[in-house]
Length: 112
Length: 112
Image (cartoon, rainbow over all chains, first blue to last red):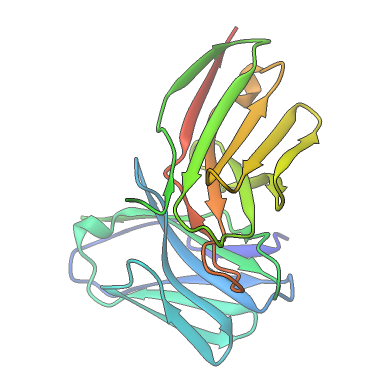
């Protein structure tokens, strides 16, 4: 099994729908991150969490929310999806004091 | 000014040549610098990290850091077609946090 698992791998949803992307990890890392990737824009940080009780906005948090249900689980929600949220979404983890990330395989989200 | 800047490319080099990828960053107190390789549709994978000024070599890869010039580069010697990918520069911009900011990536094409 992968160290960082993202579900679903691919998803097509309609404008206005609520959707949740899930991330779980077996690394034992306390830091977890959600990034989105768009062509030409690189990876942009949406939200990050340094432990279960710590949630922080990244550079592009508008339209998104997150939940850290446990140390191993970090979910990203789009409350009302819009087409410009079509992107490749990555979850990543790291251990405290380290900036070496472990990435999940990504979720390709299409909003139509 | 973007916090981490890279030329988007594509950078095209012949097989066997040296590929040189460059990255500049805005924060003088940055401590940690990383190069990730990303194949199309896949998750980023770490190939090099560097923390102090100078060169760091690992196989065919050499990372170079110049903090005074706020510049980090990646050299790939004896480039192979399998090196064709997007290379992401990542910088730990905020002192004493584990948050990474990524550049937009440089697409490298190695042709036979």
